[in-house]
Image (cartoon, rainbow, N blue to C red; front, side):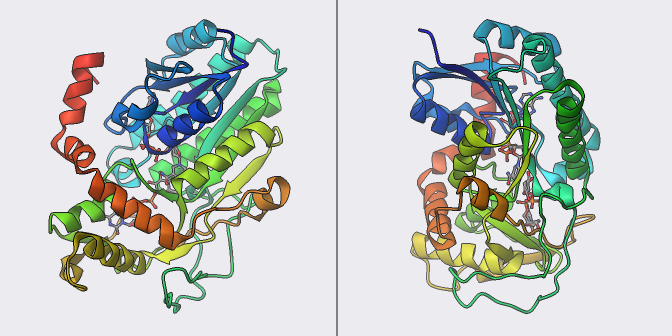
Length: 370
Ligand code: NAD
Ligand code: DAU
């Protein structure tokens, strides 16, 4: 079958990537979607069970750092669009092992760019290289209105007077954000130097189904279920802006198709939460859905040593994306968090396969060593 477009999505077996792959495979049967993923500890093909046999979906196990293999994939499938999500994504891991982050996020992105440049040979017509990045590249904001406590879960709190805008100067602090900042610069350099049609977006914290349980929300839901301690870094005063992952995937779809080449868009939830307040919501929701009495798991909160260089506040201003392309988050936080907790509680097998390591052994048998 001749496809209208052949799109390469990297990191499609991860958290956000799996939602993007699912959206594209289902929404665009006229496109071929090629999912390139190395299946690191964070990649899990169980995230894509419902689309794995779709006729317009292909999975290729490969490393973005392997330039020759990536070129082969471009040629084999006639790739004309790239949505690049593959990365090492966890800040705590980057503090322990910065080298792996530089390799995957910086050199891996460069290898993807070089492959696109080589295979498209300067014929940019109908091509697009879309790089998915993070708000963490902008650094940290102050808490100038630190006292607010949401009166109810749907109340929108704002903890400071400043926001990350597309024009905000990069100031990364962690090895993770430094590696993402570097990759963003390489993507823009490929537009400015070679004319490659690139786009970069910087998004805030995503939450929802299929997130690896090293990240705050799935980790805490699972710990509450098993009555394990909930390790709150520092005093839980740090603020993050949370966006439901399917809303991010919708934004990526819109920007891939209608975003302006060489431009940058911030994506965010207009939904700031202090960690400690968010954690209370997670506890309350999880206890309710497990049928526990109110306050049952409050005592699991355990304040632990803070993350090194812990950024105080992230807050995205996503009004450009709203103004220019009409996007806004569709889900209220109240509904999103309820859906998310339910999903993790209903998918205990998915969680157990990860925490026991069974998923890794399964795919090792299928695809060889990771
Ligand atoms: P994730 O860790 O869940 O998934 C990353 C995926 O990339 C995994 O499937 C992994 O196997 C794959 N991968 C890693 N190294 C690879 C390599 N060398 N070659 C091929 N595949 C490789 O990450 P996520 O949370 O879904 O984040 C996806 C992207 O979105 C990342 O670029 C991240 O920086 C960005 N982002 C994430 C968030 C968030 O809140 N999670 C917010 C903004 C931006
Ligand atoms: O802002 C976007 C970024 O959001 C993405 O670029 C990253 O890939 C993604 O991992 C996420 O980074 P964070 O560091 O903000 O997410 P994490 O879930 O690790 O932590 C959220 C907040 O909760 C942060 O302030 C640290 C705190 N935390 C986290 C963990 C895992 C705790 O207090 N205890 C924990 O055990």
